[in-house]
Image (cartoon, rainbow, N blue to C red; front, side, top):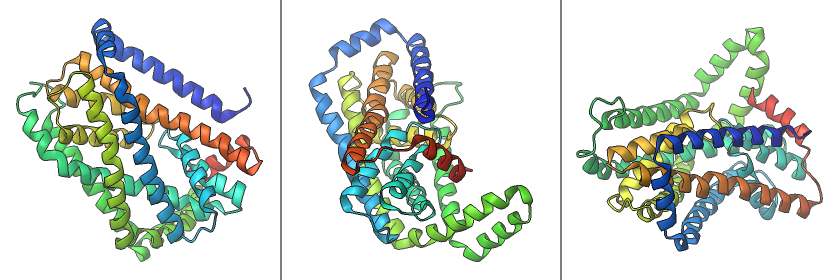
Length: 345
């Protein structure tokens, strides 16, 4: 197979199959199958609809950043490029989402050094939105976990709250560092004296120059609010799935906290493709803290991943086909692989 991107995705899918097979072995396959049989499948369009609302609101956030950065491309083109980016959300650290800046260059002549910051700022706002949503729903989770502790296990509610605090402090510190322009440029200048880092420092300097104006307090407040609103719909999707698998004791607030923490934890494990492994493990352990049995938790994990991660990848490739047909130009995957390697280092 000549296409390196498709080849990598196939290997990632193989990894996913192996991991999910391990989950089935860990749990009771017969009971899992019974849960799937009893699941109210008529809810699936509603669940996918909630996920699509999340995507649409996030597209509006992308559009906000694009307008602030004064990236002059047609509104339809920006819409198509954004949804095409979902095709690469299964890549490790989502570095593959650099396909959006690449497509803006290929179809509209925009330089990648101007558009890469849009992806970076989008990720920051998403994480901030999830942290806000997790803090807002933490009380609901705390109320339910008191009777579901795993005695003697390292994964306790205190670990979860500590990780949430660490995530919030990390993001605040990152934003603070970004706003210390003189200090940041001084750091880059020092790194630039080392020959090994000279190429990376040059790219970081250009990236920082374009990123700094996008992360003003006003922009952060607006985009974080949009992210909090958009991700709440995927939390609703998880809630509907859990209700369908029989975990009716889980409240919407608890489902929101669990989804956000699992996503944040999976995001910090950036070396995993699409957070596969980190997200599922965290979700399963947190559901166990709320006394959800494996035969209800495991089907819920499969369904939420199908309705979010794998649904978004399929949707992304569909939009790539639409985009290439609309502008009569196929994506040069080899060129994208090269540009991805250059921008990602």
